[in-house]
Amino acid sequence: MRLDKLLSNTGYGSRKEVRQLLKKGMIRVNGTVVKDPAQHVDSESDAISLLGEEVIYREFIYLMMHKPPGVLSATEDTRDRTVVDLLRNEERHFEPFPVGRLDKDTEGLLLLTNDGKLAHNLLSPKKEVPKTYFAKVAGHVTQEDAEAFAGGVILDDGYETKPGMLTILHSDEISEIELTITEGKFHQVKRMFEAVGKKVIYLKRVTMGPLVLDEELPMGEYRELTVEELQMLVKVNSSKQKG
Image (cartoon, rainbow, N blue to C red; front, side):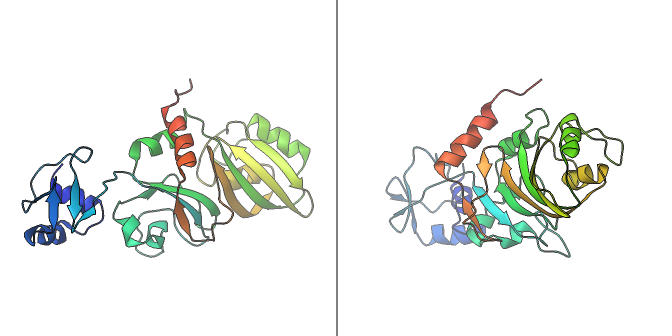
C-alpha cells in the first residue's frame, strides 16, 4: 500500500495533508525518514512512526450506535440528518455505513462499519440473521396474533413473510411486545401488525444477530464493538449460508 494512503486511512489527514507531513520529514519507516508519498509499505511488517509515535494501521471499523428517532439510516441526505452525521471525524474518515436500515422514527441498535463483506452477510436473506424489536402497539395483541406471525402473514403488497416469533409482554389498549424476525422488508414490523389490524406506535430494535443494544449507551451515542462482540460477528460472517 502507498504510504500516503495508509496514513490517510489511519486518520492523519487528507492525502494533501499527509504529503506535507512527509515533506517536513515527520514520518519514519523502519527508522528511516521517508518523504516519498508513493513509497509502498507493508502495514503488518513495516514499523511506521510519526514524530516517534507508532502508526497503527486498521482497515475496518465497527460501531454500535443507539440510533435516535428523526435521523436517517443513510450516509448522506440533502434535507435530514443521517447517522453518519452523528459521528466524529476520527470515525467518519473510515467511511462507515449503516448495516441495514431503521425507519426514520425508529430507534435502537444500529451497526455501522466499512466492512462490506460482513455487512453483506448480515443482510443476506440466506443467512436468516434474527433481529428483535420492542414495540408498543395500539390495541390488544393476542395469542392469535402470535400464531399468525408464527405462520407468516400477508403484507399489503401480497408478500408472505417468513415466520416471526411474537412475545406478548403486556396486552391492553396499548400493548407491549417483542418480535423477532429474520427479514428486513420495508417497514416490515409495522406492516405485519397492520396485517392483523393493529398499529405500531413505538418501535425500537434491541438485537441484531449476536449483538445486543448496550442499554448504557445514550440515545444518539455510539461506541466501538468489544472484542467479544466482534468475535461473535465474525462467527456469523464465516458461517455457512442456509439453503
